[in-house]
Length: 327
Image: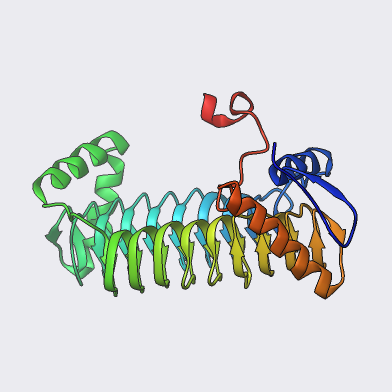
């Protein structure tokens, strides 16, 4: 085991990761990650929501429930990967849509039911792969004045009949290889309004990033999962609300210049800390003066680099058999 002595504190350090793991085990953990929300107690990994229930990884949503990975949605239920949409039900991978139901891969559309991969459309039923169309039923145009009547007749035939006809249309229309929109120099899938992003997936309004999954408004970052409004971060999980220059950390909000930290909110210049709020110049949850902090962190990092452990991913607190990954 690597050992070193702090010249100015007289504290004998055993391997940094051992000390960090001891701290993680003894520090009380939040039962739920839910920041700045109103009447949304049963949401998790969620920030700035109002009147929401059982949402996961959702930010800035209102009057929505039973969903996950949602940003800026209102009056939506049972939706996933849905952004800036309103009055939608049972939709997935939906962006800027209104009153769409049982649909997937929709962009900028309204009043659509049982639709797949339709962009800038309105009043569609059972359609696939349409662009800028209105009043279509199973990919066939119908008169505006007869649209409601025809849709009602199809609904009376029952869900099984609708789905059978819809699946038949899906097999007839070519599928897109990737799902990108309004991007510049991007490689990945389900990327929108982004620039210079390489191997990013489920990422939106991001710039100069690599190897990311489910991120929004993120810049100059690499190896990130679940981020909203972060910048200059590396190898982190669950960042948000203006996090800047954080590395090897998890569950960080409104913080900057952190490394190997977990469950820290509104903190600055912390190293190896767990469960802190509004703190600065802390190492392993102990306060230091500004000068001592940078000196001490320099010593720790120098030893970690010597041991070839600096840059090692922050390990899970829980054993594999205690997580959903073992199922």
